[in-house]
Image 1: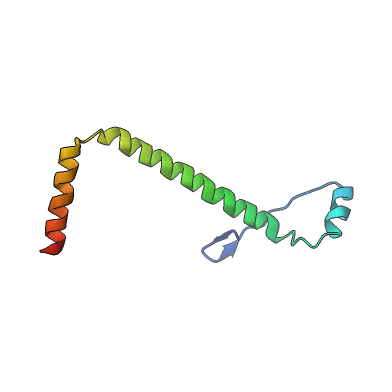
Image 2: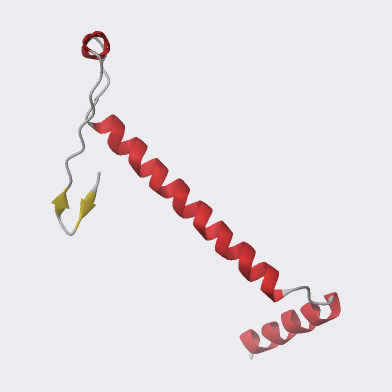
Amino acid sequence: MLNHLGRLVNVSVKVPRRRGRLMGKTKVNWSEYPREAIEANIMAEAAKEAAGVLDEIHERAGRSPTEELVKWIREDRVRSLG
């Protein structure tokens, strides 16, 4: 549901009459349908944006030698046990 600080936003959709009649013959909750679609799109766009940010970080970080990674893991283990 579109909700921002407790306020709802109205969204209207117009469909041809024939389609409206067909919609009325189904058991679909047509009010909830666009809410779910909008939420799914918002989540998908947020995931794309996050993936882009991670790609940028990965590009800037560059590669680390395996020996360096092993050293960091061992140091972290020593810190967490100590």
